[in-house]
Image (tube, rainbow, N blue to C red; front, side, top):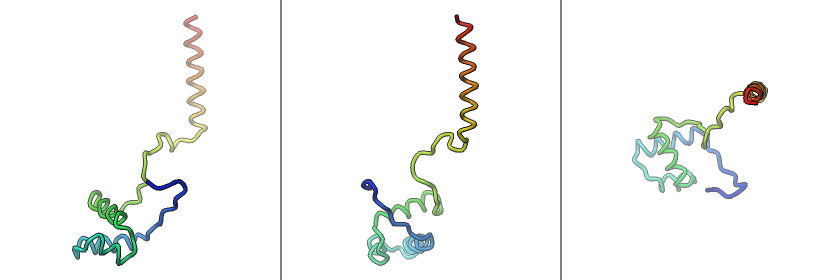
Length: 95
């Protein structure tokens, strides 16, 4: 896990594909590729794992998706207003 405020290096997609191709086609090791390209072994291992798992390099964001991120606040506000009105009606009927 990175430390607070740590900046991660970003690598070009072409470099990633070149390293993956070298690893798979030429049967080169993680350490050999890491020394040649100056990229940490763990980073290369992650790229290879993702490639083997998905069959391609993806740009998926890490972490859990935020539920309801696609709806805006106005829509949520309208839903909340309707819910509050419903709760008031139910509460009046109980009394």
